[in-house]
Image 1 (cartoon, rainbow, N blue to C red):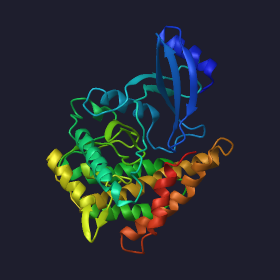
Image 2: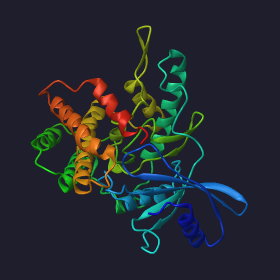
Image 3: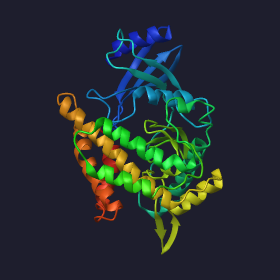
Image 4: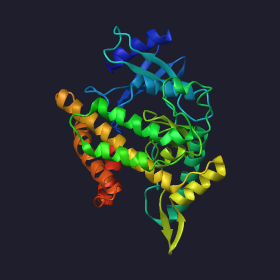
Length: 354
């Protein structure tokens, strides 16, 4: 895709059917899954920012497709879940050599000043943000996914007892489609997980990727939920397995004031859905398996298109897979877990600026 202002002006004038001006074009510096571009437009006497999403030049690290991501935004626009409005999908070779889609930008920021500052004076802020995120996550889990046709693109489990087994099999299918070599630990962990699968409290639409850096806030209000490329239908516990700082463990003067247990209690109070910590831990192991699938796809892209791959794809194809394999082995009780510092670095680097 050509993101030069001249090309974008011609394209959007054609698409919107009216003259306009491009005032700024900027690539968003965070994230590793795909490219995100902000395009400032003036037309009809008003200014707005459009968001363009397309795959990386060497290919996305996501096992799911870009058009599925567009589908999620379009469908979610018919719900109470706060998301940016999807405008259109484009794959016409007259305009682009790679497909992309466009959505409106919601005013706000992924960053919340003070949220990551360990100073106790920000504890109330951290808890308020965590509760706000949980309230919006509860909206996701209560979406009528069948009535709105989400199962036309996302496969669904047969029943609550099948949720975990379905997710394991889906993850293994994604891994097998992209793996570069044999990896016995994935087969061993899949079998182990099947033997320890919990029964879901209900079947829900699940977001997949949650946490600080994944959502758009305005003050302490979550105004847009982003990053739907890992969405699935299954156990709502899966969404608590990767919260990335939004269920912070806070202990002050020997007293636990917030953490995953308190977050799950609050979630039950606002949603009526009971999620156990044991189920969250189970899906945390599955999350590591899915990260390995992403790592394998990134590694393949780096080997296949070395001149196009970005440095973070090479990192994802090596370090992410290594840390997650260590985590899987530890989950089965066969080794010590990787150090917490390595896991924190993994989460921070995935979303760090390019």
